[in-house]
Amino acid sequence: MTPLTPLALALISAAPFDAPTGGQEPSAPGAEGVVLELWPAGVPGAPVDAPVEVVRDREEGGDRHVSGVHQPNITAYLPAEGGAPRPAVVICPGGGYGLLALDKEGHDVARWLAERGVVGVVLKYRLPRPKGHVYGHEAPLADAARAIALVRERAQAWSVDPARVGIMGFSAGGHLAASASVQLGEAGPNFSVLVYPVISMVAGVTHGGSKKNLLGPDPEEALVERFSSELQVNKATPPAFLVHTSDDWVKVENSLRYYSALRAAGVSAELHVFARGGHGYGMRRPDLPVGRWPELLDAWIKNVIQPAD
Image (cartoon, rainbow, N blue to C red; front, side, top):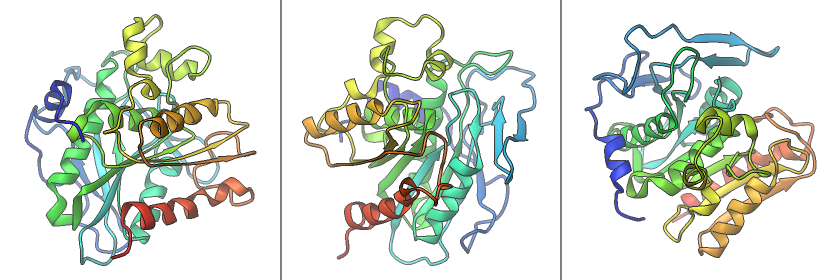
């Protein structure tokens, strides 16, 4: 991977990390995860009187959504067995950079990973423009960089291989995961998993709501280019696993363009495009072929990220 960029250094070096603030170190899959604050010395740019974040159920089945995030954190789920160092995945829920789908694109996925011997880490990141305040487009990426660094700092305690710390994102969370993959250099992830991701900010390809929430209503062209990850890929970009459906209203061209850029750069990549499934399904469409994507991901992690000795 490329050396640390000035941006990456600034994002991860602002303050030391603290001890867990909630739960206990989990010893079994499904146990309550351990929560760690990302910015113990103070969240950059946070308002003095930050409003309380809003958590609500949006669907039957208890799928929680959160908005107004002012205290970003991670929640880590550890596999039951210790042993040899294993991969870890920082998970970025989606929600158009306006909210976060905490369960179906976060905690459910982290528990599933832990059951398969991978440390699953849910990132609750700041949104660029919460009601009454503006963090701006750097905030989500700063939180992702801190989360990756924190997992690597905990590598020994959590039996994590610091050279196999990946990032996973859904929808706008996929945009954040891809941005971390192409912008953070050596401070970035070692691999990425992108599920129905927004990749591009280019008109005609991007998702308009995500673009507006992240970059504002009239962003400069240089900013659009920087946050169009398909335009930032190079040979040091980490390997990727991508999932999309042809009927998704986040256009499949997002995944196609990123995959093509990876292939052109000589980077290992795996892309699965299914006919049906729409958007926002998480792991909850077992009735359709797209519901098999977690099985395909499990095989990819075992054969590409942690191949057998």
